[in-house]
Image 1: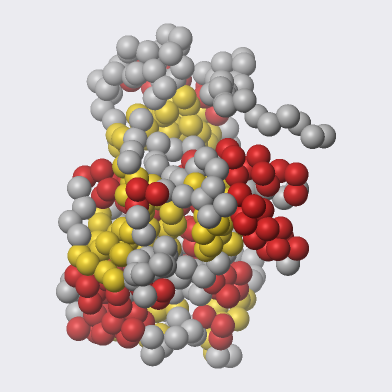
Image 2: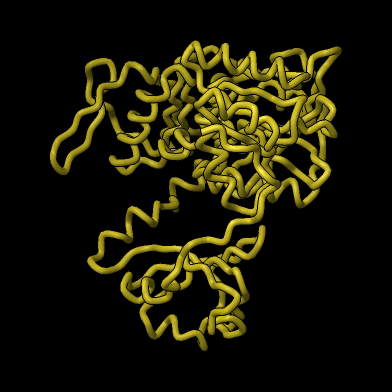
Length: 394
């Protein structure tokens, strides 16, 4: 395999380890500076130039895109994808994870634990937002902060309002998030590669510091995750479109709470903590994918006229409830069920004998007209009743 590692820091621990791991397995590998590419666009022939020369062929790309170059970096990754080169993380996945608000918006519609979060713009909305997440103390986060930078703990409502007002005056977008007190300055970092967690560590904040990041002085210890935590980490990465990810979780009273999913996780802390060859696991995964790569089915299959991919939710009153996929008549309507989301479980490639249950979400490929006919006339979602809101000041 000929592997390109996209990195602006060739001497960083993570980049060096990934290069060493690939070379030790007999692969050819080069570290390429992401900012030294030129993107060449021509009908039917997307191409890349590196340092003014046409790029030679690569079998796979491992992006290590820093937050400061997200736009250009993801453009380069996207070009590799259009050229048919396997990318360990797609441009779409990197963009999803890089924006904390965007990632939480995507995860919130799935049965995955996340801390209650609010995003507001108007000054009058700040106090109600703080109260909706449970009141002070609250966590205030910059949307694009990294390594614990831009994460603040406000002990009182008054200090929270002052911090948010100051940050907004500086044109900073901030999230107001519930403080998960039971986590007590601890969090879990799970390193996901493909469909499994290859390593995990618990990070513990020191002294008065509430942030547990190793960069903030936190101490790390290896941890063996139970099935719920492993499944949550893998699903979060997959939902955002990442194959290699660092998933940060709080240990909440109701189970794992996703804080953040990192598309370019650092390897130094977790490798030294667990004594595992994580760089090797990433390299092995990429090598396996080169021979049989996954494809973006939404991009590949929706080009057929009149056909596409859609989610179909089975309401409790549907006549499909209690029937098998065969009995449902979906196949006769030219609708193929690719997977079923049932609560926090996903059933891939379900058998025709699988019985459909209320609130099942079917990912289907087939005739769009047939799928539309299955959507009830009224598609408005019932909203859960909320605690009485503060009086509207408008």
